[in-house]
Each structure stands twice: as C-alpha cells, then as structure tokens.
Length: 363
Image 1 (cartoon, one colour):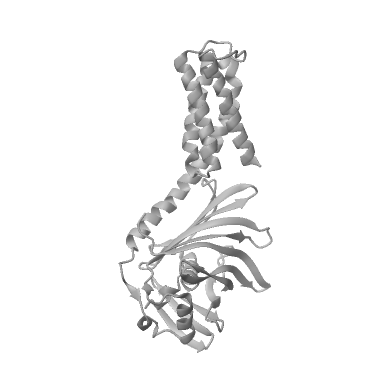
Image 2 (cartoon, rainbow, N blue to C red; image 1 turned 180 degrees about the vertical axis):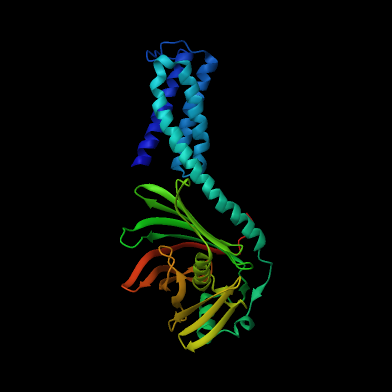
C-alpha cells in the first residue's frame, strides 16, 4: 500500500511540473503560476516531470537503482520550486518525501553492493575448468546410499561443480513470532569454501536485507533495516562453526556433486543412512544423512550447529521433499529448517527452490 501511494505521488508530482512547461511556452492558461517562466526554464520543468515519471517506471520494473534518478529529479525540482517559490513552495513536501525514501533505498542498495562485490571475487576464484568430468570412479569411496543419491541426481558424466548459484523464496520466523516472507539469492564456492547468502525479508511492510558471508576463515551475519540500521550483527567462532554446518548442508542438498570432496570423510551406517565428517579451515562438523529407497536424500541432521538467538548448540535438521529437474539434475525443491529444542521441535524456515545453476562464469 505504501509503495502504491508513493508511486501515485511520483506520477502526480511529475505531472504538476508539466505546468511550468505549459506556462513557459504559453500553451494554455496556468493561473497556479503567476511568475513568468523563460523557455529554457520551461524545458527544465518538463525534464523534471520526465524524471519523476522515469523513477515511477523504474520502481514498477523493480530496478534497485531507481533512487539515483530519484535524487536527480528531487534536486532539479527543488531548484525550480525556489525560482517560483511564492506559487510552488508546497511542492517541497513531496520532494522531502522523495529525498527520504531515495536515501533509504540508496543505503539498502549500497549494503547489497558489498555482497555483489564478494560474489565477483568468488566467481573469479571458483571458475570451473572445462571438461573436468565427474565419473563413476569418483564415487567408489562413498557409502552405497550416497552413491545411489549422486546417480539419482544425475551428476555422473557431468562437469565437477566448482560453484553454484541458488535462488529461494519462502518464509521464516523467530520463536514466538509470526512468519515473514523472504526471497534469497546465494553463491557458494567449493575450491576455497565460500557461502554468500543475501536475503530480502518483508517485515511490517518494509524490506529488510540480510547478508550471511562465510569466507576467508570467518563467518558474519548482518541484518540491517534499509541497509543502514543494524538489527543483527554477529561474527565469531561459534558462527563460523554454525555456518560450516550450513555450507555442508548446502552441499548435500543443493550441490551433491561436491560430496566426492576429499575433505569429507564418510562412515557407512546402513542401506539408507550415512554419517559424514566435514572439515574446513580446522573446523570439523558431523552430520547424518537419511535417504529413501528411490535414492533421494530426505533429511540432514547435525548436532554441531549453533542457534543465532543464543549461540548454543541444538540438534538441527532439514527434511526435504518434492524433487524436481533443474537443468538436467534432480534436486529437492522444498525444505524446512528445524531446531530440536529441549521443549520440542521448532520449524523456523520454509524454503522453495526457484532456480539453481552450477559452474557460473565470472560476472
């Protein structure tokens, strides 16, 4: 609703600027403007109108950089208002609103650029060499259910995976609070393990961006209102261990071809489960993987993940369903994230896979 009102204000404010053009070229009576306006200034009034309309169009197209022409439109408009202050001074009110909203959008955009910059560096470091194929020989050291899973996904005789791009939409919540919708984008690299996860959540009608970065022996989580006001800012060894579980979870569910990595040690349990120990930068975590008879991975369980709320360890699981074919690979398309607290299970996330692409080239 607020977005619709803002768009309407932009269009109306832009249309009012056309009066300055009409006045300058004497195209009609404009009693609202008593002062004469020169033709060069009339063109500027028309330009301001066009800029406000352009900003509205960019917002409708969901272009995150709309705030740049928005600030230009506001600045030009305010200069023109000063030139006809007696008649047009009240136009400063919508200009003030545009200024505030554009600045907030700009800080959110700038916050996201940190993520974009990290992604560019990741893809430069994790570019896949051509024709490095995963074969049956690469599977031989894996437990039988893991081998069946990789064959089911369809990774054999395809290029080994060096990076992956993933898009989710879904819902999340904190304990005792309501669900909120989100959309996320992430890039993972598997040469030097990296996970860059950027989420835009909707809370109380506002977009709240969050960035989880797991790279360079460190993990950090930052959630900032408008990309400016910190809501959550965490980093440290507990978070690094928690995110080591998370990236291994991604590997198991979303990039199964990476499970051949020598940094993973496997223990056979039975025909439908296996235990893995994953080590990165001196940090080791364990997880148990559960499969069905079709060969699908159906659950991932670990006791090594810390909850962000209190930085304490609880059992963490991610049951998944609805396998679908994405670009030739059979991958789960729906999953839940669950904390197993002493007082019972708590589902805090629901994820719907929208897109997944392996071995993305440099941006």
